[in-house]
Image (cartoon, rainbow, N blue to C red):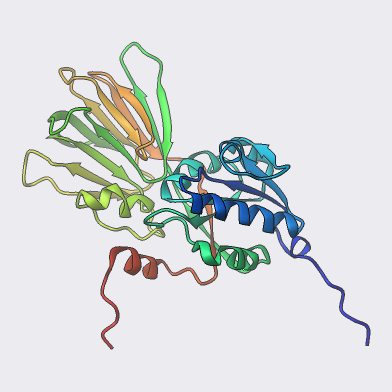
Length: 302
């Protein structure tokens, strides 16, 4: 009997060109980054290394590219780091048709599935086709300041209207699909996706939304009334915030990374972004296991 032909992981995989991203903040993260790079190159994959990561990690003869170029050229982006690294990459990579998977080298790891000590082995299974895909939507935020050009950014977790001052009350109105919902005096407002419902939104009392739910959560920040409560609206909603003309200058924060200036009398619009993020999970991924583990929920009683 003739021997079976030996095939390499590259020929088996739908992922031919891989992007390796992240800004390693520790020696352990840098070590994981370097080990993955070496393993993937050895297996015959074309590996594109994010330019900022290449400046911090010793990766010999690496093909260095920007995040945007990785989004355009690669089939799969591997993000090494914490959720912050994933959020930063996701805002750009969501604009491209590319799968994204994370290796956790942060503290929480809601978005970065792979434990570093098993990352290479699990990643090999994913590259061989043993994975499933989950589509996560992002938010698009636009700020129209009187007499100025429109400012714009996107967010995977949340868009937050806030003041730069601590415990500073601001006034604004909220509209959903051009219908008035409420006016409010509070420290601000969090507009969160299901992905962001386990982030800043959770600490402010917002509900945890399963990623499969197409909804947006509006959570007031320290409102000046006990009747103010979180509100969940369809993900297709067009949300408008109108800022009082006598407010001091405010800001819109996207995932805590991008800040857009909001002038008195400005109008802010938030909608679901057109393009989704294609998040890749290993076959063993279990969303509720992640919640139990990260939030220290109780184990089964029987």
